[in-house]
Image (tube, rainbow over all chains, first blue to last red; front, side, top):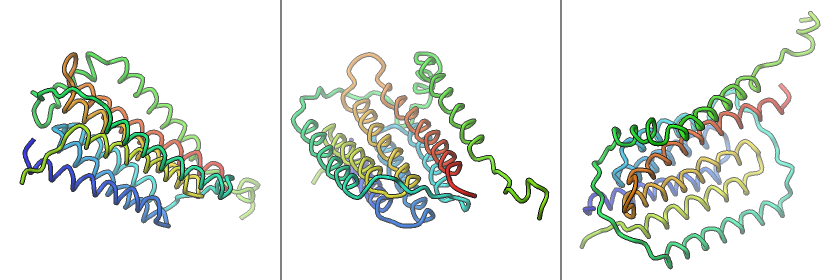
Length: 168
Length: 93
């Protein structure tokens, strides 16, 4: 990997990190949608610098879709029942998680292999998706179908009681 | 000066993104905002898979990590759609 790709990796990682931090601390769903879009752009840049161009395009499309869902105008809020103490315990748990994962990455012994794939690899990944691991692809397609049907049913707008009873 | 990326640095970034997603999910008081931590965690896992496919895959299907990253991104989109739809169902209109 040359220096240009390495710089692209670190810049993209910084963009993803900043997007994630903004996602945690910004108020307003419109701002969070923008932060999620920036995060997706950063993750796509990471994938692109790691010679995964096809995965980068899919990730960019999916995360822009997530950002549009979060930023849509008829967004509704649900307050969580958890108290502040549990939220703080969760935050401390996240900090412990990063320490544990970073320690495992630092102490691990990894083999180093030469990468022979190209920068985009769409044919190879598609061959994996639709031939070698077709069952996994179909399972994820089933999950997506169930999620879309569930979201459509759940999002169905109920008419107000006055309208149902014929009063205006 | 040469700037390099190794598997360890990729795994550091993946660890940071996964923990950041867990932090978002735990910290946000609003349930639909906490749901946005899920794609961040999935992205962290995807970065780890792509990094292993790029630097550490020695045998078998070398692009398996990229495939898993694609599937994780699609699953994240489905989870966000379902979660926001269900959250809209729970609130008064």
